[in-house]
Image 1 (cartoon, helix red, strand yellow):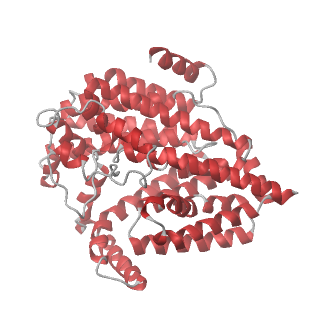
Image 2 (tube, helix red, strand yellow; image 1 turned 90 degrees about the vertical axis):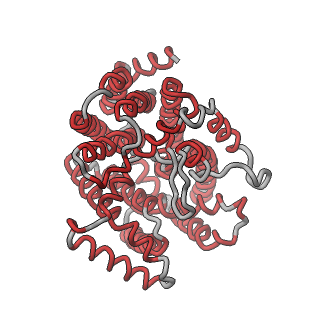
Image 3 (cartoon, one colour; image 1 turned 45 degrees about the horizontal axis):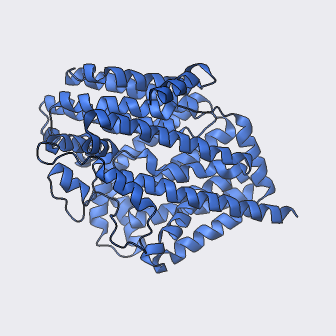
Length: 467
């Protein structure tokens, strides 16, 4: 591990690593080495320091976004936000006597930071290693390719629409295939249309966005759609080489919209269950949004929005429960996740399902309501498997796996330039820190196979198109 760490670090710092990778590596290394020392700071100092680290991670992300999706940098930014900054803000509010944050007092803050800050650092270091530079020429070549092979976009739209319409009729054991097809319609097809260009493609893109918005409001599934729209904005940045300031400004506006949505999303989701017609649900969405945003100070959803961002209050519950009431499991859930990746549910119907229905009550000691979805997150899962020190090593290799997989998929652009547009599709699950290893590794493996097959199909289709 030492040779892997030092060789990768030397490559980042001295052998062609980008500036954004150097910032990511340096920030992660600082947290890895000093995380235990800075864990004793008071709540205000933690909030200030976490905000500074979040700003550093954000600066690295937006620098990398100039010529790349920068998804490893985004993964670190999200981890710092969910595991440190949001939790520090909640603990600061608790220290100031704000009752809304009382349930977040789950474990001593010094112990929380001593365990999870080194993990955050190891995650950042793993994500920074072995990165490769990129340039505007990659995106120009991609756009030119799609402008010549326009039928590839039509094939993707047709396949995605077919998956969407037939999804309910597939057997449960095979439903992952049309689910991937449907997710490609949401996240990849808009990018194909935008990079294809021309008025027909833009008209189709506007129509597709309208369909996605209606579907999202009707089914109250916002996370994937918001990510797809942000990737569409990033695609626009990459295609047009948008200046740094505009990238940051767009992100700030999008972040405000997401927080505003979180403030009334839960209320809308609860009230919309009684509505069956799409038009009624659309009207209900507009009604709730207008009511809550007309007077933000009277919106009771802000506390739930902060809770949604603060994965730390769940990770803290895990620290309080393990090993005091439940012993460390010594890799059990990790090995189960790896084993389940290669066993189809048709062969093993009883294999564990992703999600926190089992792991959350087991490692927090709290029962989980059937209508609520929560999970302990990968950082807490690394802790319950290997303890504080072993968890750092586990998270380091998890970050390294994300970066190596990301760079590996990027190499497909040399044979099929639009392969770059499939990166958000494949790494969406890897950006979350509130799920589990079973979910992320399962999506990376099976999604990777789906992407490889899709690239092969598009290559065959494009060759037939040119002959």
